[in-house]
Length: 182
Image (tube, rainbow, N blue to C red; front, side):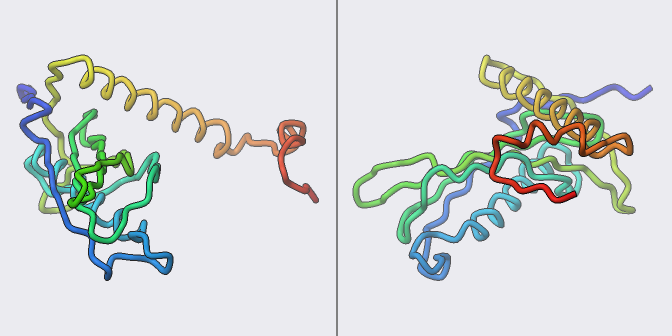
């Protein structure tokens, strides 16, 4: 039986900063969400790979909340940490802040959670080290990840099983802007 290795959250965290250029903007002059998603995926990969010591792939992206727009010329800083580990997967939380470099005003722009899976050279999933949490924030993040996983499984079991019957939910849809023509 192999002994489980553990790593501290702070030992595998990653922080990156990048100045937002006009080439990153959408038609309304704000930084394109797709560009931010690409950066998020890169930092999640780096954080998960640093924790696991393996190549990692993105299995899912949960809860990408765009809270405030990012302007051209702002400095964007992304902070990633492993919030949860399973057998072969990790949930990496990423916080995005932008800073107006002239005024120093910072704003929280985005939070997101990436589930990453560690792979070996043959593409097989491999075990990842456990996680050592040292404070209330890290404990809360681990627990919140567990709850998101449980809610996702419950949603899948309820709506994606072969036993799903749409007619059982028609009454639930009455208060929404939907016309049902079954």
